[in-house]
Amino acid sequence: MKFNCELKKVVDDSYDIEIGHSLQDTLVEDLKNCLVGKIKKIVVITDSKVADLYGMDIFKRIDEAGFTADIIIFPEGEKSKTREMKECIEDALLDKECRRDCALIAVGGGVVTDLAGFVAGTFARGVPFINYATTLLAAADASVGGKTAVDTPLATNLIGLFYQPKKVYIDIDTWKTLPKEQISGGLAETIKHGCLGDRELFEYLEKNVEKIFEGDVEACEYIAERNCSVKYKVVMKDEKESGLREVLNLGHTVGRAIETVSDYRLYHGEAVAIGMVAQARLGQKYGFISEENVQRVENLIARAGLPTAVPDYIDKSELVKKLYTDKKVRDGKLRFVFQKEIGDVMQFGDNNYAKEIAEDEIAQIIEGM
Ligand code: GLY
Image (cartoon, rainbow, N blue to C red; front, side):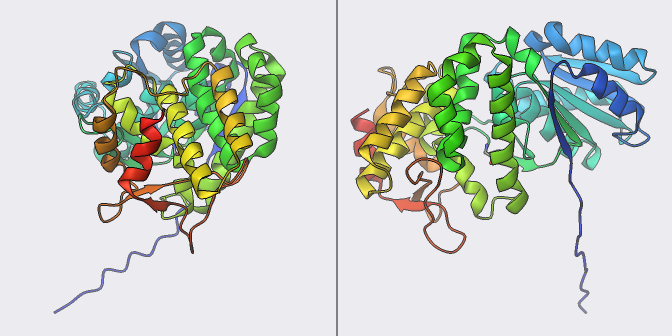
């Protein structure tokens, strides 16, 4: 006997991304207006650094608004993005008697939004969550698009799920408290977006990148809006990365590998910057990008305070081996996304945006960096 369990789905996971200044009140108003339905138990998940700056404040505001609010704080840094930390947060939620009746609010940068989103996606088989992004990196990339994950000793982001938030708040005022290297890290993803899909954004950065460090409001608003626009246009077409979404991995094949090999001495954005240079130089060999444009990419990365070379402490042969942990690897073959000049990406067939690369081709590029 055989049954067909028909489970065709029409799902509307649409959500708003609100970009603005000091959006804490907006968040509370949205909760009052049923952003997470009838749920009254709201748990803020944040890290030890963001807790003092924004997490506690948001928790108190939610509590004062009449919700049953709670807060879970974990140690800041990429090294917290682990299966073990996910378990700690889940245990804390269970201790607080949360079941399917709670919603989570991730307040912080990419580590917080990736980790809290993953917890939300599996806790009680899925509870609603909201991202309140407090870094440029989270605003540019991590908080939007529904990718959630933890790292493992083997590689970053290998364990996770696609799980969309109910809303994303991008609070530009929070960038004022970011150290310079965190601004640089977010600029790496911003430059990536310019390279792969927004020539105007790239050219704007060439003229104005220093303004972002100065906290120029107009410049910050501009890049926040353009980052989201590049990203959501891709995610809307290919949420689960069956093809097109791979373009958002530009620079990440070498980037993720070097981040792990550096044992997180390199921040994600710094690692991506090095990966961007690697794909540009390899792309030049294939004729995908001119030497002049490769130089423009490298110059902009350097002006954003990001590295363009592989640091001396990195073992380059270990780095090449680590490339095979990339999720784009297919049948044991490395696959790279390449920018096409500036503002576009290469396509290598129907719905295929990544090219198979022989190991020695990329090894040569890395050797020369
Ligand atoms: N960070 C790449 C993506 O969201 O697909």
